[in-house]
Each structure stands twice: as C-alpha cells, then as structure tokens.
Image (cartoon, rainbow, N blue to C red):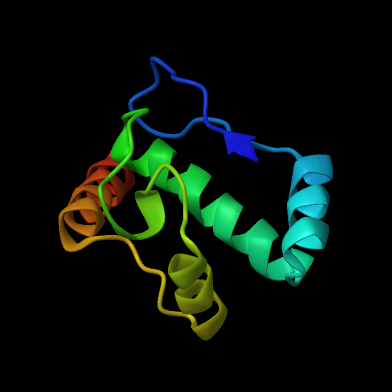
Length: 98
C-alpha cells in the first residue's frame, strides 16, 4: 500500500502511499481507512529512518501484517521492535545533529 524508494541521502527521503490501495484494503477488511492509512505511513517512515528496504520479523516493520497485528494497531499497540526503534532513534539523532 506504500513504498519508500532507496535514496543516497543520509537524512530524509520520500515515501509514497497509494490511497486507492488503502481504501480498497480497508473496504475488503471492513477496517477504518484512517487506521490503515496511519499504519502504512508509519511503516514507510520506518523504512526512511531505518535506511534499509527490508522488513523485520515482528512489529510495525513486518512485511505483511496479520489479523492480530491489525487488532494491535487498532488498540495502539502495533509498535516498532526494540532493535528497529533503537536504529531509528540513532538516525534521528545523527540527522538532527548535522
């Protein structure tokens, strides 16, 4: 439902979220489009802050979310894994310092 193309920039980058896919998924799953949109945006921003295109085995950066992931997202508990969060904090610190 989104993408974060690789960039040579040390700090920043672009993300793209495909509204039509978000709406289609939301309708098919009978989910709030705002929840899906926010979750997809957070995931794509994660790619920019992690500076890598790959995915994690758990949490916000999984390649595909399960129904239980979406349930956690609806409760505000679909989070970045501790290792991913640590990398993202370091990225933010290094970019903010420069």
